[in-house]
Length: 283
Image (cartoon, rainbow, N blue to C red; front, side):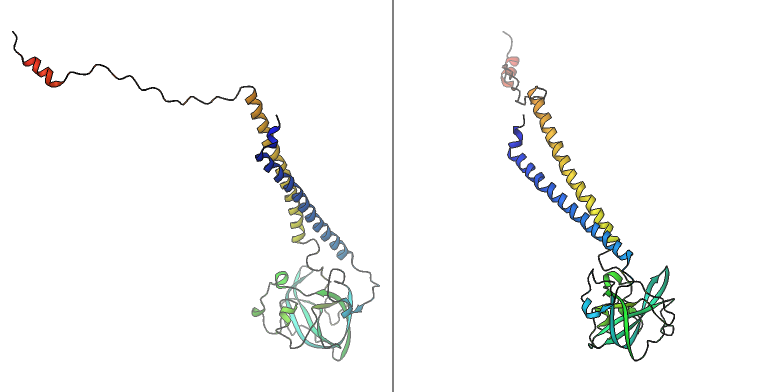
């Protein structure tokens, strides 16, 4: 009854199922793990860091990763150029960041977001940075990218404004080297509102996190579909064999051609003979 499972056709089906199901389960488990990692990172970000955590030197926390993002970093130097970052929302309100470049003792500069102000970006509203040597402590943040924050095109912004806080934007605005990171001051002065530290890229419960959860369901559904189709083919094959053994399958119709109709043996008399007989006079 089940010998059909050893035929070449069913060997191909069985091998495909044996490979497809583990692959689907593996991919679904991997996507689920990605989602769980994002949930854990979101919990860590919302829990915040201990208030008593000491600030570490900036260079000791670079490059920025999931562990160092949001850590308090300290740097010394003098403030230089000041830029505005428009289109930033805080507490449901539109506003802009006040960003000032800090020329550190190493010679490199680090962007420092000194705070947030509501309304349209206006240099007259932004307070000037302190003069002279300063010691800055702020939450360390990874550089932004155009794909994550690219609402504003750099070419469409007025002079003195910055759309994305990152190396790709700053390289065209400042003539000196800078760190691939930025700081946000947690206790700003001059009436500025502090900007909370942001979760690092590809972490937290964002759209990508729920995409991972959706992909998890899709892979598990694929595995179940493969098993369902195999069972359906198997059941149909078994039912066909049972019907054949019971003689329930319709036999092939006899398609042999019928013999041609017998031709008439009586041949009509030639027209000339008939005409001659009718024209002979009676004796």
